[in-house]
Image 1 (cartoon, rainbow, N blue to C red):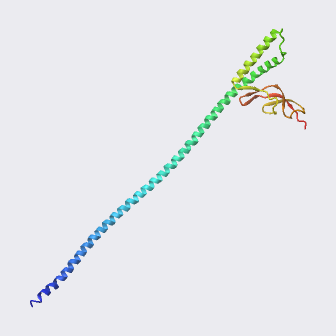
Image 2: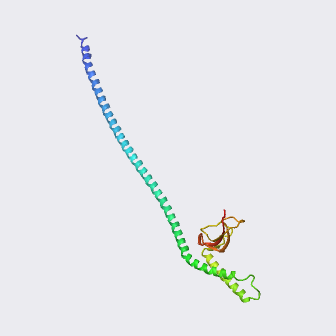
Image 3: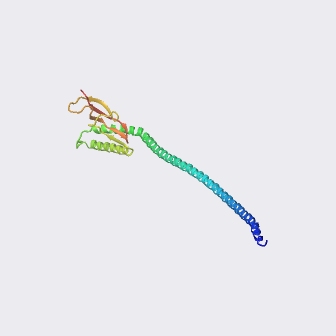
Length: 217
């Protein structure tokens, strides 16, 4: 009977050991689950933060793109505005110059009549002037000086004479008074200028009065 007692005690301890191991496993299992839940929660928070950052980055990129488009549009408007302003300045200067030219045109035309009279008077004085005709020489010199001063005054305002003899006839600059057939000259050529023409800068103030070689073909 004494030998059987220890065996009973061993048999009794085995169930207790199994219970303790099971309890320990349950404890570790609960701790692992808690850690996993915490890890999952942290991962969810990180994902949420990443999503917010991505959305914020997309908004920033969108705004930057919109701002770049606005800057490009403003630059384009500035360029066109600058070009329009420069063109306006040019047109204004051209209109001012045209107004000045038009203002002097009538006055210059009146002076040309005086120049023509003086030129005609000089052309009727025989050359050279006779030595004994001192009064005529003095008159000739005075008329010549007056004509020269008038031409200088006109030149200061852009009015210049031109003689187209030998040039091709140009209806914009020449007025044909007559035509003559001349076999030794090219048809349509100015062979004689009876009255000089005048330009007001680049504009014909008065056409030259000319004789033109006739085309007989």
